[in-house]
Image (cartoon, rainbow over all chains, first blue to last red; front, side, top):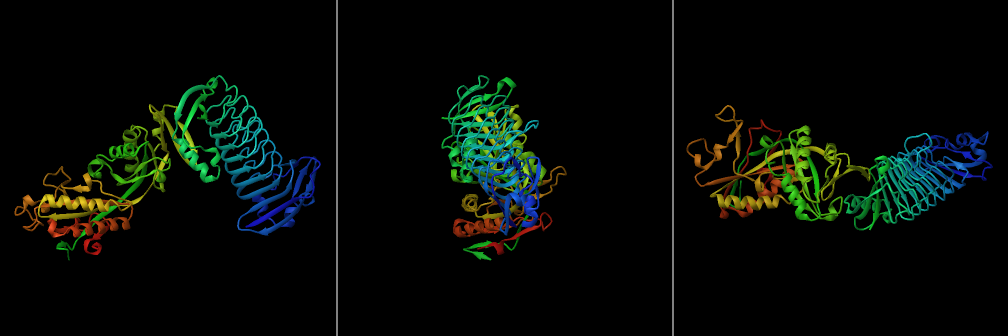
Length: 271
Length: 297
């Protein structure tokens, strides 16, 4: 097991795709070979060692630590299948793209498409995430496919667009069209929810503390209910360290939609 | 061997391999979880006629159940994994799904056995799948809200057919002794006693004079046939009752039988208990042999 530490020497002049610096690849290499890996910077190929100071040390688990990160680094934590990735500073787009296990922590904000293609594991963004958090890439059928995506701050527009499975926890607010075209899974939002919530939603659950104004007219109100599964949800979140997303009691107002597309998704408002 | 005036026969109880699962039933109040469990475990005394053997293991408070509501754990035993799956699904569908406010969860890990995987279709397309903590649950809309059930439970190898025969001067003494023993044994985890109140009065032998009857009355222990058949009863025995025990493991069964023997001996001959014996088929029925004198405390 090894811990790889990449310290960004200075912010790159253009966007830098670092998705090739995935933990499964780096864990098998020494510092010299990591420094020789080619990266795409604009239209040029640059050795990783020119952009990052690389150190490798023995560790109890495979880990990748990126220090002094900035929002021009795209694809950080992509392909993580196990172990731990920690990013100190902001991250660009596609954080944890295609993640299938382990943990990715972003100690800052991140750009668009955080957690896209994620199937398992946990991505925790301690700041805010850009548009399309947990959403599908253009041309792809599904967004978040499993695992847990936690955002301590806000998310941009179209979070959970075409989300298929898993859990998206947003402690802040969402932009417009959150959970649009959602297929399944669970979204919990503690802050305000932007307009267009759940448009085209087929299945899945969105838990909110306040309704967007307006909730799409194509959602049908089914009344106030006591739903036992919320007990499981609360206990599980509490054990995982996200107790704020649970709540004592299990009474919610329930809307079902988007009926415009025959959807049976649900928006649950805690009461 | 004599304990407190009670003779313990030099014999053994013969038990056999089974498959078992545990489910946890919860409800808004303990009485409704209990009611669902009683209904589900009704007519589940013997695999011979009921397909499975089932019983309530213990009552659970909210801290012991997945959804934080009061509940009951139920153990279900069958001769094969296929039988277990078939009867479990049928009983959950008819007895738990129908009980007000109920929910049902897995109580064992192991080879998966369907719990809500097919019952979800009762929802007629309105059922909702939820994965929580890596486990899949189904929310089935019903007239009092939602029936929540876990998709599968787990099964494991288990042992059935452990038994104690209680020989007493009269039926009153035998029954009182068995009630006390069953109450004490019921506090042992991982075991059930599937017959009514844990007690059997119609012990059987294999075969019959009638070719179509696979099992018939155990005439050697019937007091009214003393002198007519090859009786195992002395002149001082007026009634015999049996306690049948199923357990998840050999150790569980041993613990329960030791508790049972101990309780019966405590009551002693002054309560009319004469002998403790056990049923076996000469070692031909099952590989698990529980020698009473080894188990006696």
